[in-house]
Length: 312
Length: 312
Image (tube, rainbow over all chains, first blue to last red; front, side, top):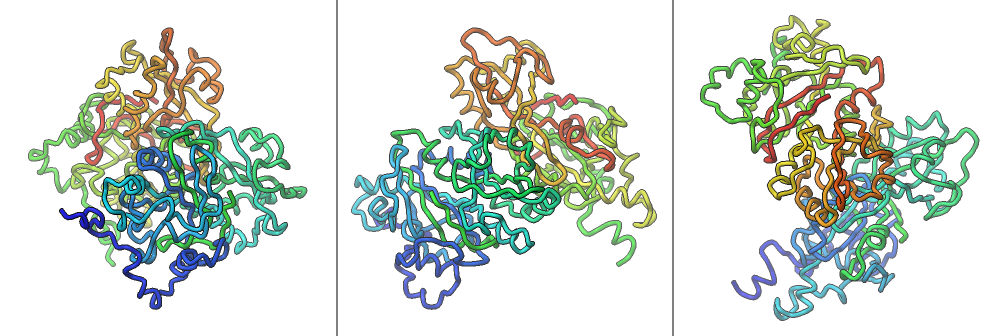
């Protein structure tokens, strides 16, 4: 086996070789990724309507099995849409079809902005690409090279984004209150544990809240129920839910901004993937880099609402 | 389309036509089902080692989507292994391979004993088969017949059984205490909600408890982690876990029997599918029959420990 074979395993198709195909590819999801790659956008809200958007988490390979288990055990909080095929390979995600144009994809460049965490703290918050942290495995001189070793040990996860069902609510004349008031959705830490997996222990579920008239709750549940890949129907609702979830004050959310609750309305809570919680709260200190992102491109396989703005 | 076509949809293979193949089929899982069918056994504990055992729930089709969602949203509490292919069809489960000998299978007869619930209460507790409740769709005179209508509206679910990982613990010299004392594993209602799905709301997670020395907890977690289809690694552990789970008294379990906890040991809690909770606690009254079972046969696809005794 030659060095080239080692560095370019069968099936690995670097994005550069298909640069010429850009002009013939016009899928909105691909265009969003190209715009991200060329640093033309910093937020994916409203981009690629009809395609599902995702959160990205990149972990050292030695912790990836635990995070994979975390997703499998907590599919509502951590709805797993895709995972990189090989540790250290930034070009391929599985399942196939997860990325609409897999022949032109690089997880290190195709998101608008990245955050890089080390020892649980951000060391780069508006990173345009991950190339300084994850050098191209094709160009490193030897597998024994320190950078290559580092580059080859990362695994990427794509998880469904919670904003997807809001378009469906709006289409059903159930527009979320925070969209009307123009603020971030209020979010709360709850006392509901995420089921632990390996090193990921002690996490609590985070919920978002949208108020609705009590008589509309069943309709709200029905509208959001099909969104299996993006948190689905609410976890709880009604005023009694606050005690059950361990929320002390609805007007003092832990994240986001408070919204008014009108008379006759009740709070409705959805589980939310709060990615920062995963890699700040959960990830043990001193165990290496954890890379997170901010805004991502469409995925081809899942069709949901557009637009999101994960603001961590 | 003829009446026969309606009653025998393509692919439906009644168990009777393969009776002659019994002598050539010796898979332990098949044998366990045959013994159940002929009422030779009433408990599957220790049967078909190496095959995964399952809990069975049969629901009216109009509630089956909600229960399917409940399983997908709570895969640790409700690990879904199989689902019947068509409402009213007792002969086929999917995914294919879920049943080792699908050409000779009838969900109505192939379990040792069944419980039948109506309006949330058991109306038959040691039912040898479900034929009086679910007549053979091949023999009913017309799709318009009342019995046929009832027969065609049921959907069957197979969910992983929690006893599977105990063999692995024993093999790792971590024999569960209740096996040593010869009692039922202690179980507790917790304050952790199951994520609701449609009509299935308000359920709380039930956990089983096995005490272990504090220094062995990580090993216990590692041994049970791979058992994804049968609840996997613990949900919580240590004395502080009691407050987090809402357990008042370890020596007063809600189900099963208490076990001694020695000095230096801590309680370790696993999520458990407590099926009775599903169809007694959750199922709305007055909404028809809900059929549960007690003891089931091996499944071919999954290889885990043997033996269980779901005693509801």
